[in-house]
Image (cartoon, rainbow, N blue to C red; front, top):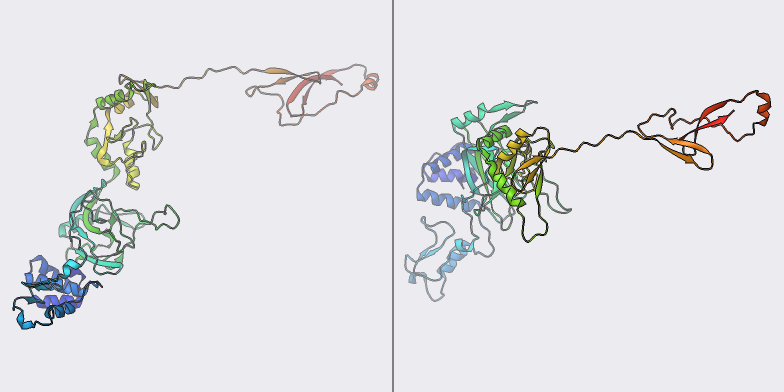
Length: 489
């Protein structure tokens, strides 16, 4: 409440508490927050609530104003006068009661404005966010806090303040790394998370509609919207943690302010929280997965026997099961065979490649069955580790009913000698030879051979030439295929 006060409200509050009320807004706000942290009296708490209600009045049309209620209390009966009521019966506004509540003792009717207002969610709901495998939480800067509506307007705004300790500032600064292009990156980050204010189960990151975040007065760029599934459907931003380290003041003397504005939705309440986290790499997660241990090969053998056990009600019995040793993600041979304990299949995928892909885009979906495969549920399969160490030249194996396995090597195809076929060309009396693809030909079919007409009468040529000569001719048929024949010329 105090963080949303203006200068005038802060001065009134500090003056009421007997503190110095001069200076800039930042100084006034720090004094007011320091007053709260040291423990303030009930009178100061009531004053804060009074200023907050005055700053954000609840304009409910169905609720009458406080002044009209007071007039109704004093004019309950036209025949009775104010002197007929006991002196303790009416307390229109006392320091011990919050503003907007009329307390009536020993009288009827009883008016309570707080009962007529909509229920207010708790300031700090017992919300548990889903753990992020690539981040280790070092400290909680702002615990989950409800984004409460301050008015009946559609767009709301709320302010939050947090400060870093000298040790936290040091951890962030020493983790700084300069990336190409002069961009700074931090492995220790200040992370802001938004989710639904639900306490039934761990919550995923979820953004309210029309979200706008400012850190120390600077606009924070939100992740891009995913393409809408249908035309006319509002685009939804993918929920993910927000790294606001670049806009945070890395100083223990100056606090940081976060402004969140959003559009209120009926039936949906959101909460925000800020954490100090350390970012992990896929190599670190792979090392942690190895340290968790390799699953006993007997677990996989028992699963094989269960899958290959004959069902008496089934007419088809499965006697063997073929499994690939190639990763379905990278189409490469498995190095760290892995699968989730929630999966019912034997096929494994490579743990290193799976972690690298989720480091870029965290989906945590099994590439074999398309079901959830979270990091906590991953295991390294001991049976597949043994098979990979024993077989280095096969990509597929076959499991038997007793849990044993054998490699599946491809069969070698027999080498056949090239054959030539002869066919008789009808109508021409010429025998043609059909060449195989592997047998070289003397003349390529693509080159057009010279055609010599053998039907021309050669009686006149017999008189001129003393002897005839026979020569082998290469002709081509109508389809361009070579024809070998003999003729006189």
